[in-house]
Amino acid sequence: MTADTVITQEVSAVGPPDALPRATQANVPAQSSAAKDFFAFGPYRLFPRQRLLLKDGNALPIGNRSLEILILLAERQGEVVGKNELIARVWPGINIDEGGLRVQVAGLRKALGDGLDGACYIKTVAGRGYCLVATTGHLESTGALARGKERGQAQRLPLPLARMVGRDNDVRMVSDLLRTTRFVTVHGPGGVGKTTAAIAVAHDQLASFQGDIHFLDLAKITEPHLLPVALASSFGLTAPSSDPNAAMLEFVRDRRMLLIFDSCEHLIDAAAALIEKILREAPEIRVLATSRETLRADGEHVYRLSGLECPSVEDEQSAERLFSHPALSLFIDKVAASGHQFELTESNAQIVAKICRRLDGVALAINLAAMRVPAFGLSQIVGSLETNTWLFWQGHRTALPRHQTMAASIDWSYSLLEEDEKAVLHHLSAYGEPFTLDAACEAARQVLPTPFDDLLVIDKLITKSLISFEAGEGLARYRLLNSIRSYALERRDTAVSLKEPRRTFAACGHGCSVDSSTTALSEPTPPSRS
Image (tube, rainbow, N blue to C red; front, top):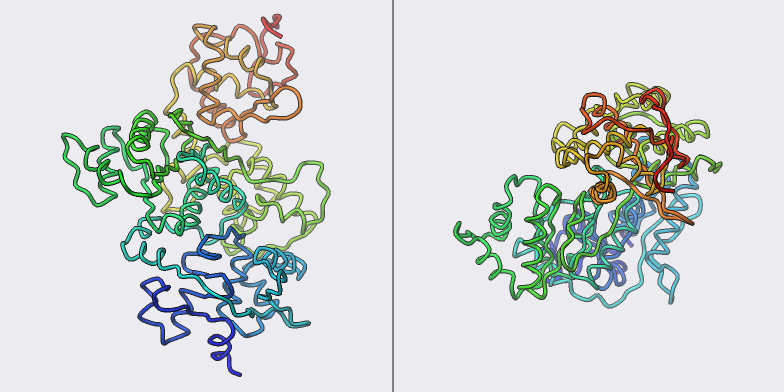
């Protein structure tokens, strides 16, 4: 039996013509061409270009490495793909042993339900590699998804990242929220990956909304009154300048669609008002927003996105286990993409862990640091992170201006602050350890013209993702991310506070340490609250 007969008889690599995305229908007789766009086996359909796996018409969350393995196996259906070839495809430029591959294949089998109720999709060929096989089964049509693409609706979405690391659970949870609530905001600091997660959610929801999903990048809009005009334009409508809302609301009123408002923080009032209006007028609409500041709009459900998981300082796992943490996995992916040959060892695993912890797992910061490894090496990267120079490391030339450096990213948030918020942020930047809410308020009162505004200003900085909080046993603890703290220290040295501090934060008895190299200590006085 040839490879072509395996594709036709066992795996049904191409479904019926009306179930294919339009781009592949013309090529149905040519199996090898069509298979690049669409594979089907059991209840699954795999779209490699969209990096989308459907089960019975619903998107199935799956890790990027597992997805890459599945795509390669699907491209070589009926053939044994060698372990070395799989490792080279999934971990390009990185030396990794077969144990890492076995872990990914095991995870893939679990996601597919391989072995349940007699299902068999991936076969291990001892000493050689793996092969995609499939039992025959009924395949439901994905015509709705295809029709959505024919209308051009799905084409409005940005393409997802080729590899999205460590966000599968977040994508799954946000997707679940959209099934039970109409308005979700992905909230977090700059560079943490909000847009990446939102785009992944959008592709995950293509089948649910029959492709009727619209993405609007608010960063390109500078004036609040242009927001409804831009949204109407994204629908292909020409909105009258006298009342741009009318045509837009008429278009969405009876439709079931998902609207994505990306980067709302600089148009926060206008975005909140428009979203509320749409949700009132169009009962079948769902809204997904991303913002560094919560919108505080009616019906909003906030999903807080934190940095990628890093191993703790006390973590003494093996190098292989350490590099399974998402932050480290992203780092080595980006190092490999820069053309640097990276050897996984016990010693450099601890160094990379230290780098990722220092960067708080922020994806943009990790990317910028990894790009420097070929020129500086790991040890020099660690040394650079002890200064503030890393804030100005350049990223991709084609990146948005606010994503070209960490300083530019934080500039975007800083420019939206009031003067009293800036003053409190400057003062908090002197302290490098987590603190309590009472301690933060005590620090705020030292620089605010009206001390009774302390809690209000702290609350604003939290909702704008400039102060992070860590819930745990007992009192919640607050802190500045290292990138934000470094940036605020730079700003503090050139800014004028609203008034001179009366006493230092550390003197208030809240267990916070002061970096004596960056701030002067004044005479301690008792705190006004415990």
